[in-house]
Image 1 (cartoon, rainbow, N blue to C red):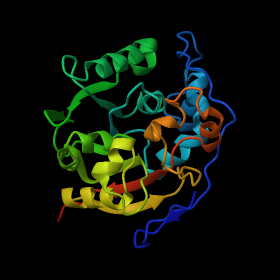
Image 2 (cartoon, one colour; image 1 turned 90 degrees about the vertical axis):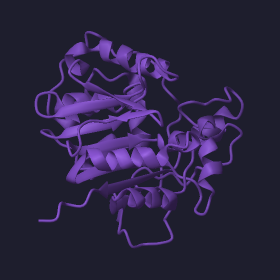
Image 3 (spheres, one colour; image 1 turned 120 degrees about the vertical axis):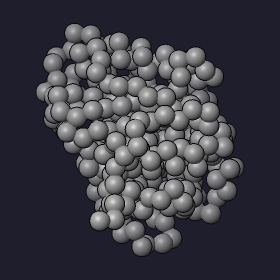
Length: 283
């Protein structure tokens, strides 16, 4: 892991990403998978409860390094924003199962994104012993953003979601809510597809990418400070110029067989990994 001091500008895009020769088929976690050692990050990542398809993406997402960089550990209250199908939840839930609290901020059950609510609930049902005690809050920007009580979270995590909030004209509201829910000294762990420096965020977001400088601007406007940045999820092979945007790349491969070998060789997108912090309270 190479950490870049916060004062280095322009933003670096260096560091090498790793690619895989194939994408494993999507498979559901087994309901009879072996028990997981609660409280252990390594055991959660290596656990048999994770599908082969999810484990195949570790080479791009570096979950151990990423969560360690964000300082996630047992005993904390952690809020995961927009967990989707539960890729990171499958790691976080066992880690915090016996010591700590995991909150999944998902869309409302009866709203325009109800299918994503149902998708996460279906994921929870695959292993209630692991995911049953994950709490749920509502993230339906810009209409409803209810992450939890003010100053209640040690860490807020968001993985590849900001582009959607930008297109919904809700980015500022989400960052303001993140600031409110974090404890003084609490951390926002942020990962997003990285646009070229100087890109117009309103334009690039439609392709799934966001310029790093704009992310820092949003966070600072909300009252957060940039604590550190890392290149652990960088991929210089990503040229960001695909017909279907970032969704041309794995794991979505939206173009099907068209240029499939090319996209598999590139791998998943180039991603910024940023750690922000809510300033500690003044004595």
